[in-house]
Length: 327
Image (cartoon, rainbow, N blue to C red; front, top):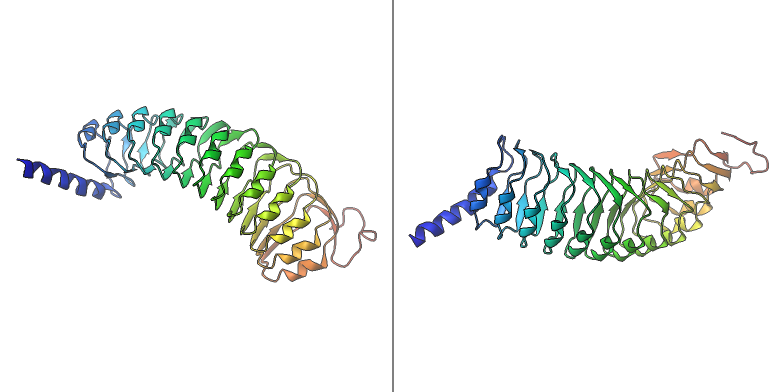
C-alpha cells in the first residue's frame, strides 16, 4: 500500500506539468486541492475559464505555479498566500479582476512574479515590499491605480521591473534608487507626475529605462550621466522642461534616445556627437532653438533622426542668421 501511494504521488507530480499548452476548456476543479504533494503545476496556454479555486491554497508544497495565458476571471484568491514555498507565480495574460490581495506579500520566497495583462485594479499593495527575493516583477498592462509604494525600494534583488500601461499616479518614489541591480525599468503609459528624482542616477546597471507617456515635469536630472550602461532611454511624451543636459553625451552605449514631445528648450548639445552607437534619435516636438550642431554628423549609425517641430536652424547656419520658426 505504501509503494502504491508513493507511485501515485510520483505519477501526479510528473503528469500535471504535461497539461500545459493544450486546448483544455473547463474550470479548474476545486478537487485540485487534494493534490497536496504537488511541487509544480503548469496549466498555462489553454482555454481554462472561471475563477482560480480557493482550494489552490492547500497545495503548500508548490514551488512553481503557472496558470498564464488562459481565460481565467474573478479575483486572485487570498488563499494564494498559503503557498509559502512558491518561487515562481505566473498568472499573466488572463482576465483576472479586482485588486492584488495583500496576502501576496506572504510569498517571501518568490523570485519571479508575473501578473501582467489582466484587468487588475486598485493600488499595488505595500506588502509587495516583503518579497525580498524577487528578481522579476511584471504588473504591466492592467488598470492599477494609486502611487508606486515606497516599499518597492526594499526589493533589492530586482533586475526587471515593469509597471507600464496602468493608471499609476504621483511622483516616482525616491526609494526606486535602492534597486541597484535593475537592468530594466518600465514605468511608461501611466499618469506619473512630478520630477524625475536624482536617485534615478543610482541605477547604474540599467540597460533600458522607459518613463515615456506620463506627466513628468522639471528638467532631466543631471544624475542621468551615471547610467553608462543604458542602451535605450525613453522620456518622450511628458512635460519635461529645461535643456537637454550636456551629460547626455556620456551615455555612449545608447542606441535609442527618445526625448520628443516635451517642453525642452535651448540648443541641442554638441555632446550628442559622442553617442556613436545611436540608431534612433527623436528630439522632435519640443522648443529647442539655436543651430543643429555639426557633431550630429558623427552619428554614422543613425537610421532614424527626427528633429521636426522645433526652432532649430539648419546645420552650418548660425542662430543669429536663422529666422524664427525655420524648418
